[in-house]
Amino acid sequence: LECQLCQMWGSGWLLLRKRTDGAAAHADPQLANAVLLGIILLLLLLKFVMDVHARVLPLQVKGTADHGHSRLLPFRRLRGRKLLSSLRVHVSRSSELMDFCAVRARLQSALDAMVGLTCVKTHLSALLDTLEMDQRRRTTAPSYVACTGCMHMVFLGNPGTGKTAVAKLIATLLRDMGILRRGQLVVAKKADLLGRYSNHVSRNTRAIIQKALGGVLLIDEAYSLVQGEAELGRECINVLVDMCYAFREDLVVILAGYTDTMTDLFAANPGLASRFPNRFSFHDYSLDELERIATLMIRAARFTVLDQPAHAALRAMIEPITREVPCGNARSVENAIAAAVRAQSTRLSARLSHVSATSSEMIEVEESL
Image 1 (cartoon, rainbow, N blue to C red):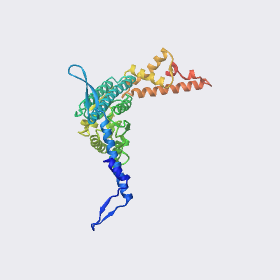
Image 2 (image 1 turned 90 degrees about the horizontal axis):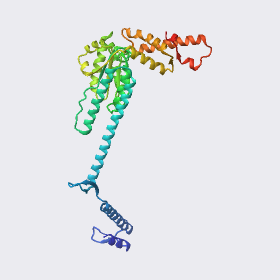
Image 3 (image 1 turned 135 degrees about the horizontal axis):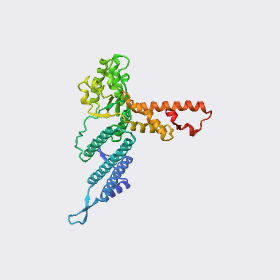
Image 4 (image 1 turned 180 degrees about the horizontal axis):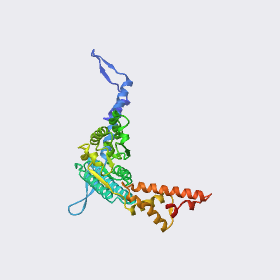
């Protein structure tokens, strides 16, 4: 057919069309040539597609027969695409498992760097185990429904026990696991939520929650919401409860405060306690733990405790912190070290006109005392 069309086109064959009066008239030769050329190109394209389709070798995969001999199983293109898709899923699942190992390693490294907090570390490890197994089940069984429940938390403990540091660690952990999309930490207090006027409570609370979406919102000293302007605090809590439920898949809210005073906060709204099922208890540091924290702070500031008498003086300086009510923990240790550095600076400034680097990096017994 192609050859015949080419011959007719080459010999100048003209298309004829029948007019309405029955007479025959010749069509435009240029129009006829263009039509024939289009038909030929269409046929050539069709032939090319058929040749390519015929020359494509069937996909073959190596299989194993019942007798242990290898055999080749032909697959069509559709089956090949399914095989490629399954390979991609397998690779993605393997990468997810590797990510879990990396996340666990980073969490363990961060927890090892923290002093004390044994109960918190145990709770965090259990939380990671639950999230990991939940994601593994979802990977192997796509129809699996997660049973982790609500992720909102309560931090109970005195100031200076590392609540903000742990909240930041949790935000990073949940972001690395893909549970939170951003992983930022937003810290808010009563003044940020209530505002200056009574009609600003709902607006301010919603604005802060919108800012924290995709991450973690830490409400420090949350018990103060029901102290003083109790009605405004209750309005803030009502908005908080509603939005915690509405954005439970994209937000983790942490309420932090003293153990005793937080009881009043949960009594202000009957539905508040059920919205925050995860509770972490931050116990006060022991004297040995406070001394370790002080040593880490001194090293971070590029100072050095000279000898054993200096260590004894440092311990004597920290010991009264354990009797504080409420205990200031690491915050009080930081204040004590800052006071010791000021005392050293005053002494060195009075005695020396030029302080060498070696002298300025030392804390001696008399400065600590």
